[in-house]
Image (cartoon, rainbow, N blue to C red):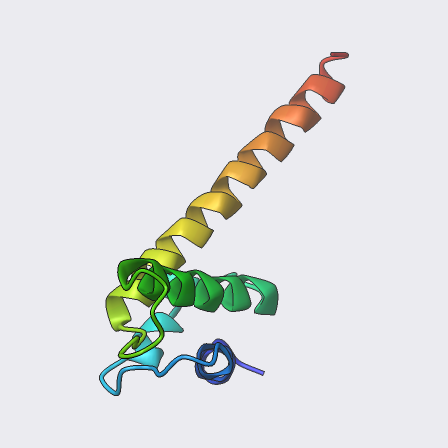
Length: 99
């Protein structure tokens, strides 16, 4: 399955309405979510859902996931991936250098 298929499926599975103007093609592009696994995509959608709920003080009425929520979530997940990769590199460097 491609990200273009998985992203809207996960977003809709979050049980919150998704704005009609969301550009899933942009969100699933290599420039934004290239290299993301299905778990990363699911995390993006969870973060977007939590963002709108926080904005609305956890009131479900009128809560709609917008493009900006998904873009912010993509950035946060991308940062987490980069942080983890850096920790792994540092750890392997320490092992290679004999700690």
